[in-house]
Length: 530
Length: 86
Image (tube, rainbow over all chains, first blue to last red; front, side):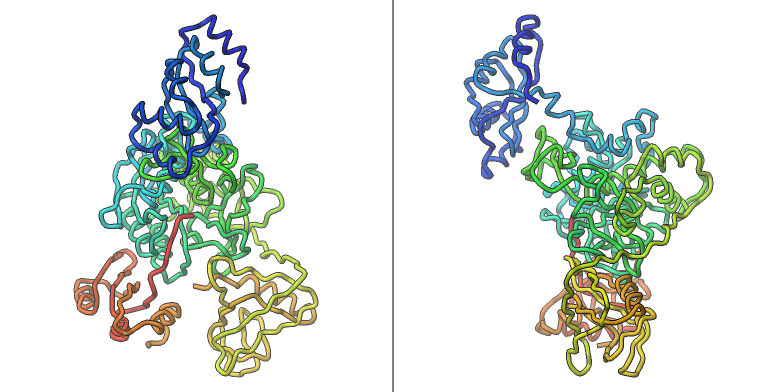
């Protein structure tokens, strides 16, 4: 909002000594080469030189006796402080935005899920330990207080990617630098385990090791804003199961492959016990397009719950989730020099981790006497039972719906015995489409034989997505080359081995109702190839 | 290769590699103790151990994977898989 300049001039007359904070709008944003300089030590001369780079003359700043506090990277904004008597010097040359208006909507997600009311009640995650298994956490940020930090990447402890610091700020940022950026559970204890490098990449063993460290360090909640391809045999999957068995609440991102269709939830989000988090977009009544969809392995409902993840697009306070910025990382979307905007199920996940911390605090304060997996199951039950279903989405897209923290706390206050959430039965959706695709079948003894099933209507099969090839698992193999049982479905005229690897989608041709039902089953069991 | 003990992905990957090339593999063990770790150290270089789930990350020559598969305490061998931020 551009301010009424007459008001500012009046203020200068009436209260000339009043200190104002304004955002001065320059003419052009920093170039890609210059942008990283905003993270260099902030000497006054450097700030003035950066201001020149975005079209704000240093001489004007000096003439107004103003002090530059922050320069943003993507937009030509300089936050300055000055006495109101000098405002005219600035207004003669530049547009300004009141700093309050510039910032007050930057962290809306807390309001959306009802956190502030919770904090007023005194539930802030105190006494609960959250482990962020990620790219590390920058504990030099005023909002971040890390009680212990570890790394499975030799010699690397800093967050040189920025992802982990952003995630940690959402879960338990203190909001000391700017209160409006306070995290969901600001008084929770934070431990950081760096398992991903400066590009956000790591391995499943590294992630599993990170979770093991978190378990051994006594974390109550383990935040995994990461994922990849895995299954029941891979280490990150098994360690997540083990953590849950020990009563650790494991919260993992669904993934950002929703545009590729069904069955795109990654591991360890696909572990049945783990709270798998999908994302809503900026409207928060709609699923974000990128949010990965279930089902998980063997038709398990995934994701379990949704939280705000923001929208893809420009660096805008309306689109992105704003949280703490690592001083070791480079970002093209910064706010206030200390915060940045990011988008994804990674951002949705720590909202749920923070909420879990608050629920755990409530349960403990009320003397909930159960531990181990009964405790973890109960926290999950509370979160999922109180989530708000969104209109028009399957449970394989939204799980129980959007997290509602005040309702969850209300239920936590009434909960005395362990509970376990069970999703209502819902068939995986069939999406009509106007064309069929070809499937190529490998691993056939003699030669590649196309799989042809005739159907009277055409249905889209789950797309392959980034998760890799899809695999049809045969539960029972008959020696006859005529028929194979696949989850009680007969596919005739085929010779198969243990597994079909679907390289692309299928041209499915079958006739009659019998085959329509079999196609449903086929859809349900198509899972990402591991 | 021992049927069922090695993932298809790893099997495929090593089929395209030189036997003397090194690769990091993820091993699920039936038992994890000092003797087993000592034996694994003779076959390759242990890079990471997860005791809670009995997983070991081992740097090994492709040709030595067959030796590994013959060990009774080996439950499953897979390739090291990529995880990344979401």
